[in-house]
Length: 492
Image (cartoon, rainbow, N blue to C red; front, side, top):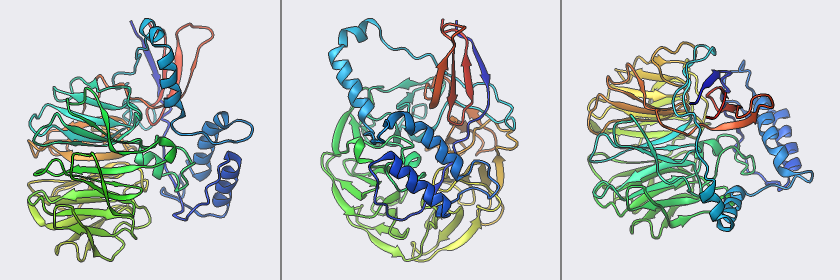
């Protein structure tokens, strides 16, 4: 019998960006620390929170410093990001019998704990980065977590199964499912938002880096590499991956190295663009039309040949200082292209992306954290309805006018966590919408008015540190990212 006592200190993981300048990356921790402190002192840090935010640049730096110091040694030698995974594989190869005799078993948390005293905030099970819907079965969903791998439900989220917990990277940034043969699916590994949001310096470790794209042909029961591979020490990120609905052997992905396309189910890839690509979209009514949001001064690029080639269609900086932005087109009116800018502005084009006008500036009064929390869903049946996830969840029923908070960190009433990373309308029911955030996955069946947690059975909590009791055997205390301090009394 397990017993949990939960005390919510609510360890908030707020992000910063240290300039978009080019670094001559130090290979030594102490040199890197000196460089970062100099940037903070010289005010080259770009804040993505209010001026009175207590969790400022120095606080974020000190968390990183505390994490790194025990891992670099007295000489400050930086470690490879894949060191733990390789050490595990080597140990496992030499000790298979021991693993079978004494296997690891999960002890939780497996469900949402009670809400805590921090503004009464809703507490969840852990960060979910992405959601994928089964194209033929409304009860089957997949989610990709920050550090707990990929999970599947076949009953609408009442329970979940982990799909292979031996992946080379347990961080998943995106999922693409073959719409004709849904047992064939692809995952983009790595924690893109956790890495990029801290700094453009790849040694400023925050999340897990990508090992490339993995493929499954049996619904996720097993995985194998595709032709797009990385070693984690290369410190690369994949931001978005899409699959052609008509020719599902065609895939497109956006990453730090640019825009890549495969026409043979991921066996080989062609680089179409060398600029960092954040978001990709296929017109919902015309699969020959693709759109890409890139870091070439944050330009919108367009393809009218099924993703074979792209060209810039707008010379305006669409995203702004914070570079994580999203493109959306509704099946209700494909003549309009919406972009949620990194700075929190919603803009729209009525001429195929050639020019844009500002619809609403959500950065005031709604709080966001630059490149970390940003999600955007446009109703497939009514373009006046949209939900936008920043720190809080915002909804409009008249896109160009009024926006209201559905729920907030200060006064949560709808039972949903904060810090949003994905919002998706159901492909089966336009009244149903799914949300992924720092607390897990949630569902609304009334277009975002009320929400229910789908976290039961997920074992994905990201713990920063843990310790055991000297007085009470089998008792532990652990601090999680954005989800409380957990105290477990006894493991039986």
